[in-house]
Length: 142
Image 1 (tube, rainbow, N blue to C red):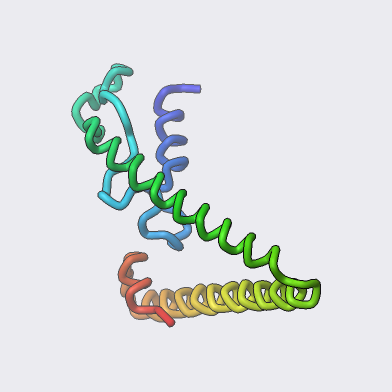
Image 2: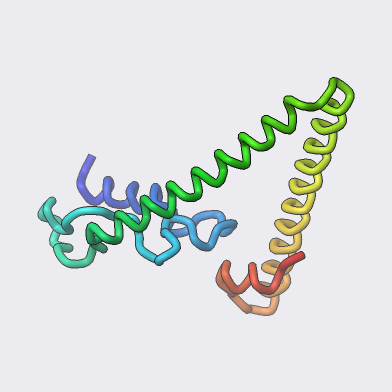
């Protein structure tokens, strides 16, 4: 496989080009960087200054933020497991039923939003208006 073919595959793998439009932040972190670590241009591709670089402080901050998110999720899961352990069989069944109903409602809401985005995009394109995914997400909401 030639280098330019590999490069195009990498573009699609990162999710920064094209995509399905569901996540406007796909392929980037919250600071807007593209997630490439290290030095740019070591492969001799002629793009030796175009890749983003992280400092040690940036990496430390990202790791710290991800660790905090992980710890928060772990605490939430532990609290739920303790609560679940204290329930009797009927309460457990009711709790599971509520969780399933909540998940079903979230999926229905997401499907409705997706259909609304598709319809809005269709109506705008009929009028010759092409909008970005970010603008469409702003226009269509609950």
